[in-house]
Length: 237
Image (cartoon, rainbow, N blue to C red; front, side, top):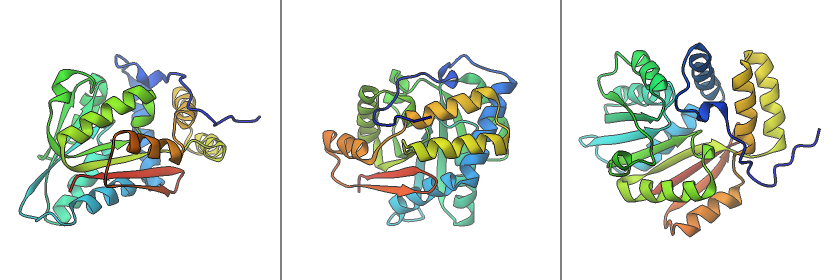
């Protein structure tokens, strides 16, 4: 079957329901985190943070906000990296689903520098939140183009150091690869369907360049990375 990837799909995902809860969601969150870790997604975001902070003194505390944090896996990765490298990280996870936030909190109990907030990022409290770095890992594709412009404006206005975006390339090869991963990881029906929609909601490089130019970003880099990801770094310093 031919997969048309010319345009981003507007088809919704089940996980877009902020009121969703239960074992199916918990399983999906944990499987997504595991797959992201195994395919190098966590490392991709971590390398982006390293690039942004390379000239910042280790004496400074660095506040990092993870938008659409899921089960908190990326924040725990950062906390471990910070501890190992004597970095002072203050880490905050944001998600609009209360069940997701509660699950992330349980998994992060031993990390004193990680906190979580249940917030809709289009609401005023988040739009007034300040931070050094904002992360957006496998989250930006959930939004329509006009919403992405709005969010990136907020990210750019409220970050002191920069923005790290790690998201999916929209391609038929990635679509077929994920179908194979569904079998290997025995993903539940919701995860299978949402994952395929996510790829069709992903991006082409020229779309990320368009967003960068429209928002007048002066210092940005877009790199294709395995597995069919884009690392999009916007530096403020």
